[in-house]
Amino acid sequence: MKKMLVLVVAAALLVLTGCAATAPEVPVTGACDQTDKHNLGIEIAVDHDMVVDLPAGNIQVVRRGSGRDIKVRGQACAPTAEGLEGVRLTSETLADGTVQVKAIMPAGKPKTTVHLAVELPARTGIKITNGDGEIRVQGVERNVEIHDGAGTIDVSDTKGNVVLVDTEGDVVVKSTGGNVMAQDGAGLLKATGTKGTMVVPQKGAGDIDADGVSGNLVVTSIGSGGKINHKGVKGLTILPNGMK
Image (cartoon, rainbow, N blue to C red):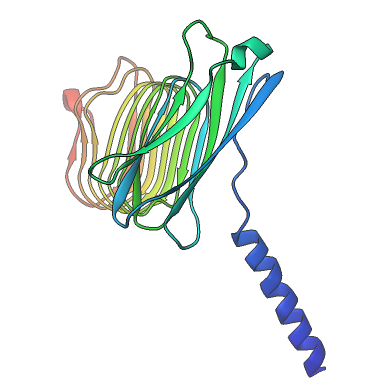
């Protein structure tokens, strides 16, 4: 009986270890008739940041394991083989220790996209600039900053401050350990479990849902017809135009 119990525990540990090591899928959506894969491995110092510059495509970022390596898996997509010509994924470590990753796409390829799955080590922050695409960030232990032209943004389980600037698309923020600054054009802005203060300097079309803000909730402006739904705000609630 004891031997069987040991075998069961060992098998369970093996399954859990395998799950923890599973890399995130490259978040490809839409048609991808022609593909080309690009992978990078970059070492980064503790308490430094990664910068990602992507003209168009989806990005998924997770924190994984120990060590100091950033792992990037990319997939370029295009309707024709010609659309993949000249597409590259580059990396550079800047003088201040920041690791910069860029997707290079030559002009004249409007239907070409590059999708990335990024694994960040502990105590690493990230800044993302994306022209068009969905962005999902989970578990980052330092600050997160995202500038997105169009597409949904989902940020969860982070420990630092979060800055989000989105022109169009829903923005969802869950379980953040610092302050949140979100500027959103069109779409729903939803925040749950913000440990710091939440500031919305500008909100276009769409509603704001804020639930569980440990600090202040400050909304400077919201588009016509937009509603602000809030509960569980422990600090001050400052809303525009006499809204409550």
